[in-house]
Image (cartoon, rainbow over all chains, first blue to last red; front, side, top):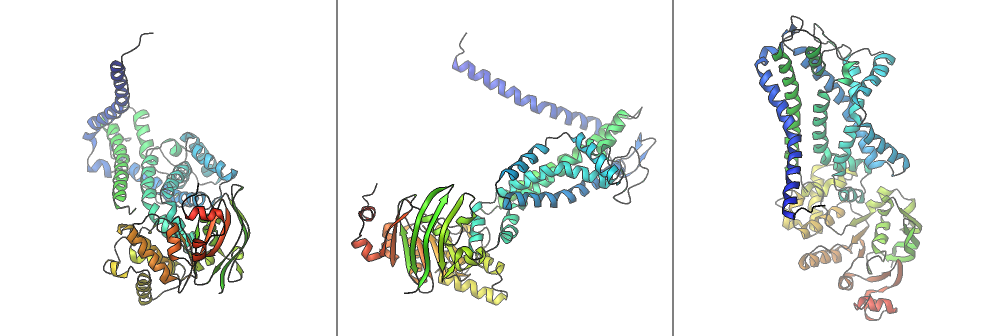
Length: 284
Length: 250
């Protein structure tokens, strides 16, 4: 076999790694570019704040925005306390035995279950068995179950980032374990939990499969009154208008995608800036 | 000569491996007992067992008894024990809050104080007793993380004094400090023994000879010798002790 000179192999591997990086970035940039180029003409105040008209071929996407907002907020209100409490238990209280390790492993693996499976699970449990019907609450519960492993994992990471020595000092002063958690660990883990939560919100805002059977409706002529109503949701709305409705104006499809993308991106950026802000303020 | 702490046949194990072997020793009230010995001699384990910090570790197990004023500490509530037996760690670890809040953190949680004026008085008294008051009285509400190492360690002492314990355990308190800060910490130890009983673990043999009333020499998890500091340093009974304190060990 021919042996490459060190200089040439250095150049080749550099090229290879650089191309791989570009392959990762370029499609994303193209997607963003296309959506903005085709969609920005649809975006105006009326589009964001009015009901759809003419079989959704005109008018706005207000109910879909509200619907997504309602589902996601409900989901976070349910997930956050449960997830943080579970993370505290696993990190601060649970003894390191076989069962705990099994639970931790299960949590990591649950994050890899396809979202459509969660959707079917939600349909079976919340919609049919608990008779919640297709509703905001059923969709929110389904999203909660899906997001719980992620919230637990990020919250555990945040708790772990608080130095062990702070806990030791607090305990050595005769302060109880719960007080230590409440007054030392949680305040210092809060920033990490918060950024993790914002990223979770961003992630579940764009999820379609879990709400497909549990919360989302093809078209609802009015806004929801309670959490037991079914709603329109942005990701599902986008799916419908791009596949189910003939003669759909292209700019509305792209406009809807743009709105959804901006929502997710904005939240991701908020999370990034929050992280930078908290890191600067960190006291150790 | 009242015995404050009475250790009877204490054995400690990490992961089934014996690190302290059937140790029996007394600590007299208002005295400083220093514990010297090379690495892995079990001296830190001994110290951490006295306020049951070692019980927090998963792989730790123990046998034997330790009495604090005739009361077995292993039958006591852990939090209550740690309130009576404070501990100063090797590295100064201020909590990530202001100097003021570092002092009042534990007393507040333990419900020892409530009134604002009492709290202020407690902060002042604790800082004075740790000879830190003059350094920080103008910046009590700034972060404790920004103090120098020596100041941080004295803050940690003040923090312990604020819960008014009976015994204070020092775990190599000067290992990260410069000579002047070390001298200040030693000075405050001599001052503190009037009110408290002190156990000092140190790698610095000279420090043991400077401050302690009694000195114990540990080796490989065994107590080799314990005696009045002067006696032990001038005429140790055991060859191993002599080798260690004269630096001919190993």
